[in-house]
Length: 255
Image (cartoon, rainbow, N blue to C red; front, side, top):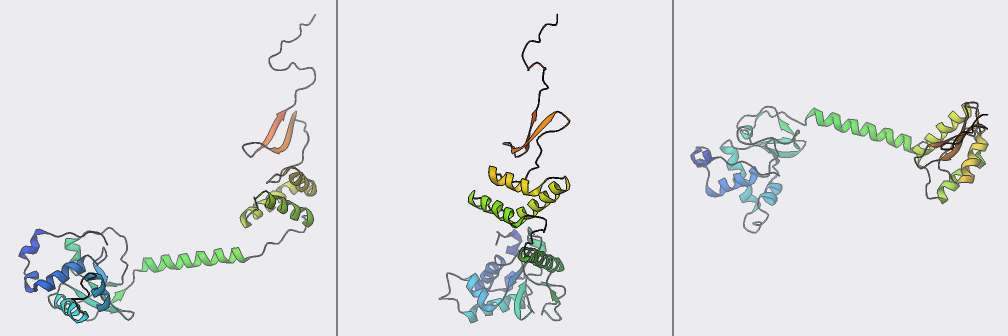
């Protein structure tokens, strides 16, 4: 728990003046056990263990509970039960302490009198919604992770297995996500008119992790090599037409 604020007004507090020395000490020890909203686990065993970790041999469970009830009697502490567990709340907490957290880690009180009658306790709905969202997302992830991979019928299974074996030997076995991306690459390459058997054989032969098009030339004067460059992209090599001078050479003089 973070440090708490102690104001000079404690010396003139009529409420604190009603407490004995041990009861006031109990109050301060509970203050540092509360969260940023002034709530704490108020089960007797928990209070004794957390408030007096170095005094368990001198402060009994009955004595710790007696001091807790003294705080309740003066209105410094309210006790309430939620889901079978006892919790505590300092009703004037907001007047003296600062809130750093967004949510309380304990159930909260909507209404409570000095004797804590007719308590309506609840866990913030925001936390419930967030936890339910996390559960839904985790279920979706589990479903996708458990779904078996089915190789498309138009892919040569033997070549595909050889490609995966090559990746495995190179210590680059693809993940399920990577396999899905590779299938998309094959769909694109197939739509562009590439022979998928040749595409797979090309990557297996050259120990390439990816799949690239088979294209040895084109009408645009460029030769596209399927070999990946250092940046991971296909290289583009320009072909110089016959009779053109090379870069840096002097053109021949026309007579």
